[in-house]
Each structure stands twice: as C-alpha cells, then as structure tokens.
Image 1 (cartoon, rainbow, N blue to C red):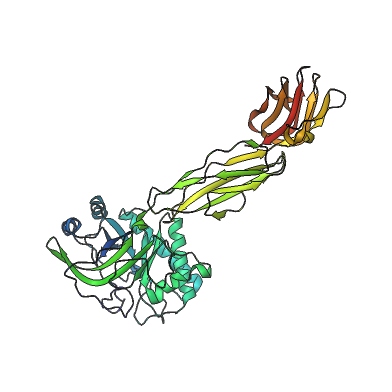
Image 2 (image 1 turned 180 degrees about the vertical axis):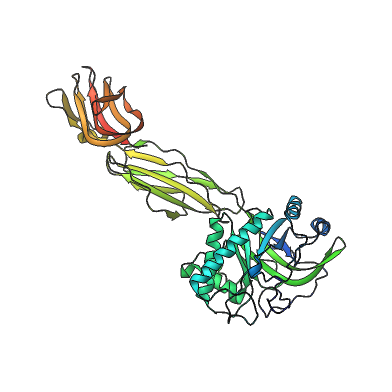
Length: 476
C-alpha cells in the first residue's frame, strides 16, 4: 500500500515498517497456488490503454484501486486518481478483471504509531462511531464507481505498534464490518501481520465480528494463502489475500508499472448462495421419530460449509408458536421424537465457505397420530371401542349408528386427518360447522383455508360400520 502522513510527504509502502520493497523480478511473479489467482495494485489506477495491454499480456486477473475517501481523513499518497471513474471500472471489469476497492481512512490511535495520521480515537465508543462513518463513506464511494457488492471493501490499516490498544482496534474493525453489512457490502481488512492481522485474528475470541476477507502484507514472495500466520489454519477459508511482493516493477505490453502483488483466494469474489433442496415429508406419521433431510450444492464454487436450522412444535391441537433458536449443523438431517398428537416443523438454510447463505427453506412439518382413545364418544349407545392388533396402538372405535360423534376438546387446526377402516362415511365438524366429509380406509384429510379454533367432531353418517382408528391435527 502507498500512504502518506498528513504533515510529512513521505511515501510508506504496504505492510509493517520493517518490510522493505522487493526487487523487480524479471521472470515475473510466481505461479499462484491452486485455488488462488494473482492481483496487482498501484498507487494510481493506470490509464485504460495501459490496462488493456496488461489485461491482455499479464498473469494478473484483478486490480486493487484506492477509492475516494472523505477529505477529512484522506491519508493516501495519490490523492488525485485522474483515471479512476465509473467508466474505467466498467471497462476493466468487462475485459474480465475483478476490481477491488481499497479505503485508506483513519489510522491507529496516536502513540500506536510514530507517523502522523488522522488517528482513530483511543476511546472505544468514539472509535466505533468513526468506523461506522468510514464504512458509510466507503460504501458510497464504491457505489459511485460502480464497483459491485461482490467485491469486499478493504480497509487499509497501516502498521502500528503490536499490542497497542487492541480493544480499540477490534472495536473499530467490528464496527466497520457491521456497518458495511448493514449497507449490503462485504468487508475486508488489510494490514501488517504483527499488528493489524494479529488483532483481527483475535476478534472472535473477544466477541467481535471479524471481516469477511483478510488481506495480510507478508512480503514472503510466495503466492499462496494457505499458511498465513497469525491466522489459524482453517480460518477465513476461501477468503484470504496475501500481499507477497511489495514495490516491484513489472512490464507488460510495453508499459512498466511499480506495483504490489497479491495471491487472492478464488472465492473472495463468490457471492452466489448455495442451492438448497429439502424434500417434502409426510404430513402425518404413526411412529415416534420424525426426520427432515436436505442437501445443497454451491454454484459459486467455494463449497457448502454448514447449515442452520430452526424448529417449532406444539402438542395435540395446541397453537403453534414462533420459531425457536437458530442452531448450527454440519449434518444433512434432523430428527425429533414426537409424543402422540405432537406437531413439529423445521426450516433449514445453507452457508458456503465464502459466507453466502441461502434463504430459509419452506417449512417441512409433520404431526403424529393421536389414537381413538384421545376422542370422547357421545352419550348413549352406538360407539364401541375394540382392540384390534393391526390398528394404531391396537384400538379402534366402531360405530354402527347414524349421528354418533367422537370429539376433542377445543383445538387449533387447519388440516384434520382421520384414520378410518371399513366402508362407512363420517362428517368432520369444527364446533357445529361441517368442514368436510370422508369415507373409505386409511388416512383421509380435510384441509381448511386457514387455522380454525374449536372442538373437532367426527360424526357417523349412516348405519354402515365405520371404525375410527386415529386422528391427526395440524396447523400447516
């Protein structure tokens, strides 16, 4: 990176103060590791004619550009950017390169650096407010240039004294990310391994939200992102950038530029959510265990990383409440034990390694039968309970008379299932309102346009023998 102090017109290169510019490599940059590609950045966005030559002849496929920053905190070495316009961005992207926005705002608090900058406040609350302001400024700047939301906005935090005000710095990075997310953008943090990236790596353990992308200045000359201490292996998988060469001069298409070089994970640009498939489940079951399974694929290429699910349940005919707490899962199925008459629903969503998330699936809901003993027969003769080995829980209620009823207490129901045997017919009522009529054998449903509340009555229609084996109530 190239920044200057407010009062001292001195060019500072990216990374820590101890990192010296690399010499030019006549053979060009090293081949990037599998799963990564090369990016270059320069103090000034090159002209479109130079870009055309480099995009045709060079091994890079992305460029980092310094986007306009509020004049009150603008610490960039190149303040003019005469070439960087929305048209420039559109043309470069149309030729196949990604464009990465870099934002150089306030730097580490005073006393954390010997250089003179516009500083982040040493007060945590004030620092967080400054970060939110910076994020809003950066998002507006990127939008004016037409840089899409698929590109994270990278905050360039130059090297500072390791361990200096880490709580302030973590609060600043946290607020930067949260505000960008609120504005529909991805966040990134660039900086030295010893200061910036060390503080970023510790954010989760301090209850802070880390950036979507981490960009470390390493100057190792190795175009890879797999090993980037202090980042623990496996963290920010698919969302790493390594600035492995600083201040090298490359020449392509007859034009030489002094640049920094980075290896970038291919999935830094992945903004495509996984595709989730959740097969339908039986609306009612007789067994104790309900199962919802699912699968997902990731067209963006970073791979499905995990799932989240939420459930809700209610007892027999009880009103369904709100969705419960969201839980994480790596498995592709969820099981639930159901008591007689219980209702249970599940929704799931999928995340990929790039952090994209699918929408919540359609609710998959089921209910367990309640057997005929849950129903109260009308007074008088005409209904008799029989023990039948093949019946649900081995009992049925048999009717041979007209207008005999079995009823529940007051319940909530949108769908009413009756398990019948024999040739008879029954009416289904809620309160005194008939809502359906079913006949035949097996599980027979009456579906209502909306949830109704009241007593469910199963009423015999004729003198033909009918056996009521079970009832299923659901609100879905």
